[in-house]
Amino acid sequence: MPQPKRSTAPKRKAPAKRSAPRAGKDPLDRLKGSLDGAEAALKDLRTGASKGTGDLVRDLEKTLKHLRSNARQVGREVSKDLAAAGREATKSSPRKAAARRTAKRPATTTRRKASAGKSK
Image 1 (cartoon, rainbow, N blue to C red):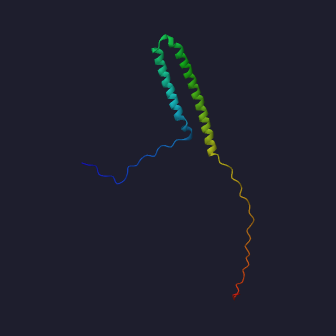
Image 2 (cartoon, rainbow, N blue to C red; image 1 turned 90 degrees about the vertical axis):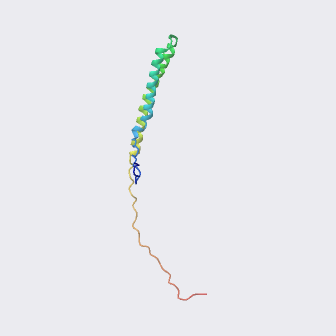
Image 3 (cartoon, one colour; image 1 turned 180 degrees about the vertical axis):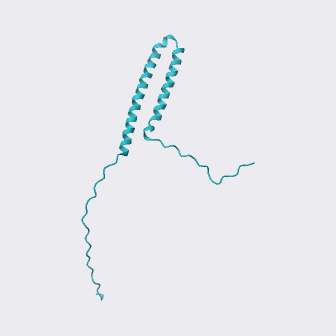
């Protein structure tokens, strides 16, 4: 038996809004995940590599250690920058006092009297 047609479209959930401090964390989380994957691959390489590649593996370990340290430092700097940008965005500027104006005087207009006759 076929389903009856809907009279309205199904409701879709609105995408979740991100807060400002979270915006910079997703790429850093991906970077940390990649570094973890590289470290796991390096451990596998260390066990399967020959004895002559020990220097290369140590150099890779050292480079990976420096990358991880730099990633932490960049993460801290990004979070500080985002926090400062959030504070600047929410900071309200002081309002200027309205300039005082003198009271308006009623306009005095002089009307010309319309001449009764036309001059040629």
